[in-house]
Length: 320
Ligand code: HEC
Ligand code: HEC
Image 1 (cartoon, helix red, strand yellow):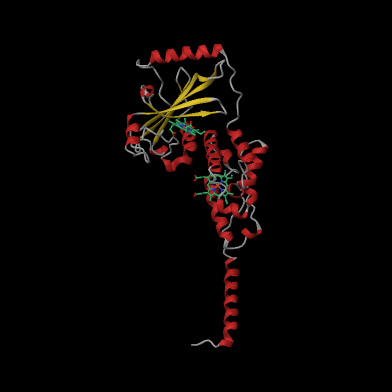
Image 2 (spheres, rainbow, N blue to C red):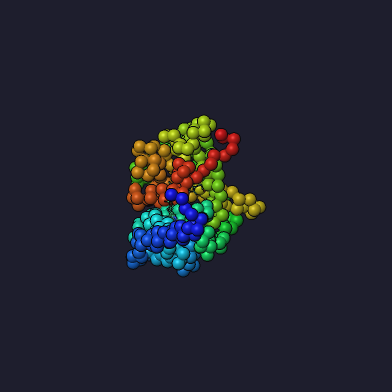
């Protein structure tokens, strides 16, 4: 069959009509989004809620409000899929029914995702620029999770106490300490102070300095570039000290605050994604956590770096 020249406009017209009909028919295929009642909304100060409402609630709550252009298929289908997935990860309208530690972990993950620029979804920001987080918005969220504390003042007594504590600490090394098990059954790794320092970090909001140590399996893995995933047997220790300025303005390690561990054993710790978590606090090394559920907090906050086998630290140059 040949199409005569004169009938071409007619064919084009029919195609446009067919396209329109398909488009109209598509509008009737509508997976429901729905806004069930917000039964357990996040409890947070109004300024925190304002930021989350503006940038996250459209997908991560039961208060989804679609713009008119999101109501039209196929955009509607993408929105419906995003909202469903987003709510299943994190729903601010239902978060308060989770245990406190898990809520905290989720909020940490949320702020991490926002800081990395992964959330709100970049594809969403293109059409909804109002949802972009400003630096001030991000600061509101970070302050909420990590309220800044005043820097410690130079204090000779605190300095002497910290030095005494440190001497005691050094003398104790080599003798086996009596330390209670972590609530999830992990025993205190006695010799971590002899491991190799892999990295250090400072935190200015709460004025602590931290040193991260790795056991010999970790150090070997670094040398052999086998760090994602880390091999079974790897252990990290992260120790934290209070920053203590002296009268000359130098910052020294003050009181010992805590040491925490991640122990890799893919089979044994499968329920916490392959790592056993434990933390001991203070000079008397009191195990952290009311029960084994405390690990939800650790896993939640390490989840944003799951593509890095849940480990934040990149080993210092030179060890590799
Ligand atoms: C356009 C919808 C949309 C908006 C707006 C949005 N998110 Fe998401 N979010 C998603 C989707 C979809 C997923 C699931 C992604 C996946 O599974 O790959 C998700 C996942 C997450 C996760 C879990 C990450 C993971 O991979 O486990 C966190 C945390 C998160 N979002 C935080 C936020 C925060 C904080 C905001 C606001 C600053 C925000 N989101 C805004 C759609 C959105
Ligand atoms: C608030 C978020 C958060 C929580 C909760 C958290 N961590 Fe971490 N963890 C981090 C960050 C960030 C680092 C990277 C080092 C740094 O910044 O000090 C880290 C580092 C570590 C390291 C060194 C290895 C690495 O991943 O870099 C260990 C060990 C560790 N954490 C153990 C724990 C244990 C045990 C718990 C639970 C009792 C826990 N963490 C809970 C954020 C968290």
